[in-house]
Image: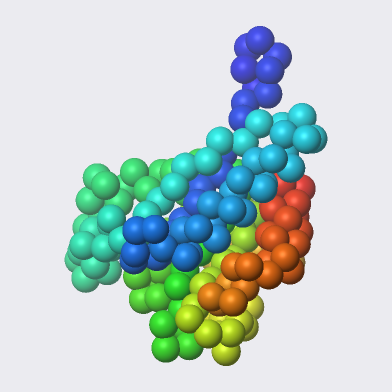
Length: 181
């Protein structure tokens, strides 16, 4: 709480492991963040979002994996996550699993950093055959980190971007995230 009686804004961390610019993973995360901010605003709450682009931290993540050295750039991202009231975690799917960059980033975090933080899980892939990756492979990782994953996970294959059902799922996940925050 601020001294003027105004409530501090909620902080949302958007983690994207997409490697392109722009990437489908980032686009899905951004859509979800926009909707979560809008849902919170309708409920009289302010949410500010910070984006963590893992492709920009790939060398830092690798260094941390092999040496436990946390670079200042990586520490900044970890601090953003630690201070977040909610998280959107989005990754491309490679070989039927979340990207190695994505999982490596969460592997270098302290196991207690994300306790009880609400998280929306999001994944993108070139085919709908990978639609269960968020629930089958990402959800256990975030359970281990003791987060509160939103009931609705998100997945988008190329054909989903023009399907109104994707927007409905995004709206549902954004509402769940806003309520959990």
